Image (tube, rainbow, N blue to C red; front, side, top):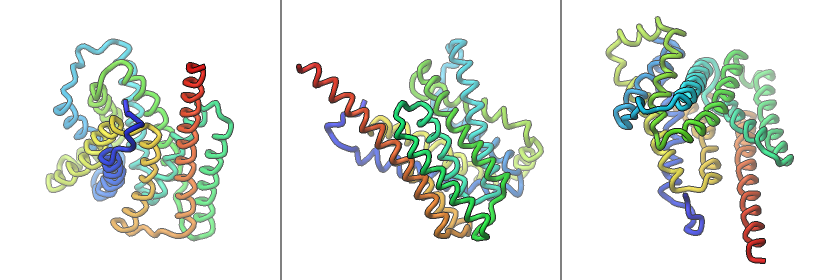
Length: 301
């Protein structure tokens, strides 16, 4: 529980910033392996390595898990598989910054669906305009986006929404990180048969092992650990707003590391999607504060 009277934890803010930078950087590293193992094979390797690292770090007592916990862990694992597999398949076809921006619409849409505030439709509308701007950039020749890549990014966003739902449900059954290593292993097993040949090619290329380890650390172990630690130091709305930095970092890393051009239309689209996320989170935080204040006022009457 974060004590809001103490203000924002600088350490927590730094943790989220490092995590949101680490994720797209790990994705950029992953693209170096696509020519060997394919996007799906690389995603499976990343999840397998991450699950092994997490199993060693967390050492979950999986033999004590209830049947309900196992059910939600498997569903959680499937959502992780979709999130990672579709994301890597997308960045194999369209720019990294565009992929992350489209992906962000998934959790934003989930927040709107679960919301009882009609004003939140404004934010999903802003995100929708951002997607339209990306479409305009593609059709006017400013950039050419593979439609399959866009579809994969959208499916990654939908998987992210399910990830949020099932992560919460697993957290109700198990403390801390107990369910994450097992769910990540389930995700790796789900992706394994999709591109088994690519997985074999990667395993038979020892000179890329260090790249695979760096990818797993940057994409899974470091951001997950930092985000969970940050959640203990920051209010949830502050945490969610800071996560909106990820599309910015993704666009910059794609530009610097992957030589992906970054035009005005794409910048506008990313700003609209980030603005929608920030607006949605800030509105939710304000409404929550108002409810608490009204409750406290009634108690003092």
